[in-house]
Amino acid sequence: MMANFFPLRSCQAMLFIPLPFVVALLLLILFVTVLRRDEEAQPNRPFLALILLAMLQSVLSGLRWGYGVQAVSVIAPVTAAMVPPLAYAGVFSLVRTSRRSLPARIALHAVPAAVILLLMVVWRDVIDLALVLVFVGYALAILLLMRPGADALRLAPFEGAVPAYRAIIFAAAALCLSASVDIFVFFDFTWAHGEHALTLISLSNLAVLVILGSAAAAASRSRAPAETAEAALKPETAEDKETIATVDALMEARKLYRDANLNLDRLARKAGIPARQISAAINRAMDKNVSQYVNDYRIGEACRLLAVTQKSVTEVMFEVGFQTKSNFNREFRRVTDMTPVAWREKKAER
Image 1 (tube, helix red, strand yellow):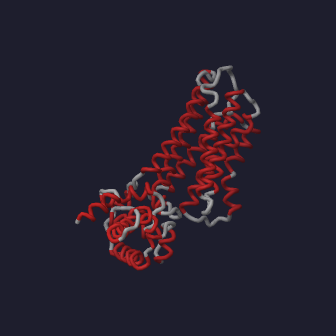
Image 2 (cartoon, one colour):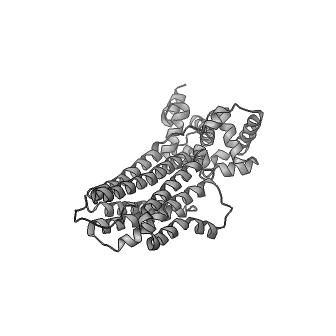
Image 3 (spheres, helix red, strand yellow):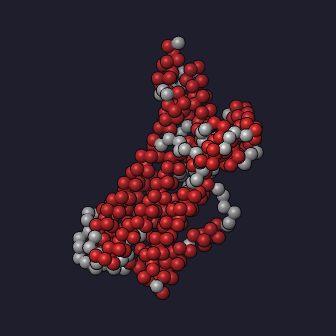
């Protein structure tokens, strides 16, 4: 993603010349799909902007390395520096609400692009190193936000928390991969006069496709990640028991789990308990994360409805708070070791 602005020093043909444009087309399709999916909800604007920026980067890469358009080398470093801040901003918007105003946050994340723009004028030789530091630095910052696992995504609905967590880890890995490619290309130009640069860049575009496909696959069949070592090592406390009793009473009395948009932040507000305290208590006392805890209630209710009503599996799924069959079936198997249909048939035989 970064390695597309080095001076062209050979007339090599780029491997699979159309590939960057294919990547751009796929990203455009992904953007439209996400936009339609979120049209009834508040969209994650940084992630939407990130998809568009990645599409632009792919087009610039194709123009630069496929057709030798020299002007691209002026634009590409600056747009590349905008990618990691957008990724971080998208993750941060799912983790917590910033106390900074929107203009202040925009100004803060515009610093890397501004620095690269300045370096292009006064010290072009260090642009490569600066971009590597930006990409690796933001990747580490994202991983730091994700230390508590899926429970870190306080503002994400429980049903989508685990897939989102996995996708975010893939995004951080992609930032590191991009930095690695940039380092390889830099040394290739230094030692081999760019002999392997075009191959590296072509393969990196292919790697982006693989990462996108892997992220989609992980999101569709992911399981809950292991919790933090800190929570696992500490024994259950009296405060944990009190916290869980409060949340249990709230779940049973108000059926909060039926809310498909329920997330950790909303649960904490309704319980009057800090989100971190709820997450830590459930991690220590039950050896599971909060999304699993809520889904246990949903599956319990689903089992009851499947046994005592004639409602279809889809109707039951929506009634208990799930929105997709894949998540419902996966969680149902986790709790009962059976599919919803098999579970209903088994109950009918008794």
